[in-house]
Length: 120
Image 1 (cartoon, rainbow, N blue to C red):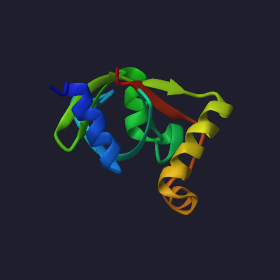
Image 2: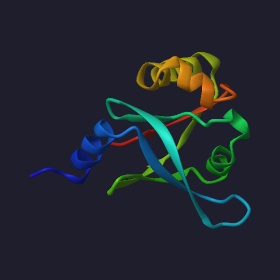
Image 3: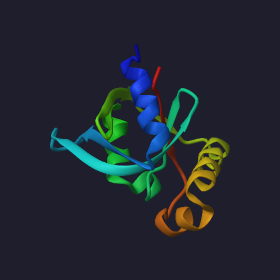
Image 4: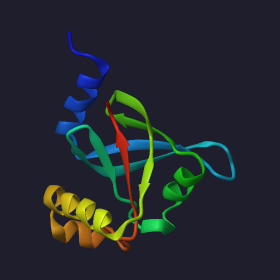
């Protein structure tokens, strides 16, 4: 019998976009955004489109709880910021491999941070 985690990994393997929900650092309200992601084994990587200026990223710094929804397969994760340049570059490469370097360059304006969450 497939577990909730199996269903989540299955959905993540099939889709190019998920919805993340974070808690607003000022409002305290839940804020949802569609985002691109990369699943690498048990790690889910997110790349804020405007780097450290991205609002959902700023919210995660205050409250690291993040809710993901991959078309009905859902999970709560602890978002871990990645600020080391080499590690951020590695995440950018994963995104370029999945989505194409042209689209990553077109939609993302700053590459100074990334985020990962463990889906185990």
